[in-house]
Amino acid sequence: MHQADVVFEAFEEARLRAPHLECRTLAALLDCSEGDIQASRLGRGVHSLALTPCDLVMMLPQLGQVQIVTRSSHAALSSRLEGCHIHADQRHASLWNDRALTMQLLLPCWYWVSLSRERPSPTAEEVPCLQVFDRFGHVLHQLYGLTPEASGWTMLEYFATLKRPGFTRCIDIAHDCPKAHRPALLASWRALCGAEDFSRLLSHHRMRRVEANRAVAGHFSTSVAPERFIMALAAACRRTQPTRASLIHAGGAHHHRARFKHFHQGSRDTLRLESDHLTLSLDSSALYEAWQVVRPGPEGLTTSLEAFDASGEMMLALDLAECR
Image (cartoon, rainbow, N blue to C red):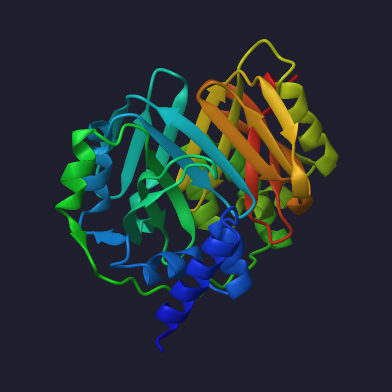
């Protein structure tokens, strides 16, 4: 029996015995990626899409109302979108609407896109769904069709294939900033003018966000207790003004400004913030370190509160100026 068949049978059994079990939880139990699970379902309700990432992004307005979920290992940011403006080329795409949602997408990270029918929540009906994976089988984005009758979903079926992806294992390599390189890093930080400059800074110094925060501690960043980040989440519901939340990973950034109305702490340390068009969830047990970070930008200095897990992966960021 092929490995894909073994994974598929495990998925089917789990769906029957524990229908509320999340796919990422099952992937951890099986020591595989979510991409491996979805690929095992090819031809059994799942298809690959023979579209370039740029072409797919440009088709989004034809999908009607959608729910866009951006994921990290321990957090998710979900936005409902009824219409949007898009600018895209072969490498980058920007998406924004009039409800303070903005997304910057790094299209070369879109290794595989699957088309299937999934449930946006355990109690919801199945709807058309696009899932974007990187080459390691990690989910970058999920798009659920809230108006399945929209013409775009029918058009996507014409590009459905059974091409199987070949995922690889991800190896995390830390790159702490040597003491001799710190002056150059600080000089680059002072010269920042926006998000693109900061991405180039990280690439030039071969550092992740958490490593850069550690390297400029005492100048542009301050380590804070993880509990302060949780307190900032709870405080967002008491504010009368919108709060800007951001989920940023290798595949791009998802920013949404909203006035949160509900803060809920569920089972297994899951925290949820909800508004009319935005849902934010976070596994607080995975929160390992948090930083208050100042960056120069086109409109002056901006301050954010950033949370990371034990591996250094960024979980979530909040605009601190809007959380007071």
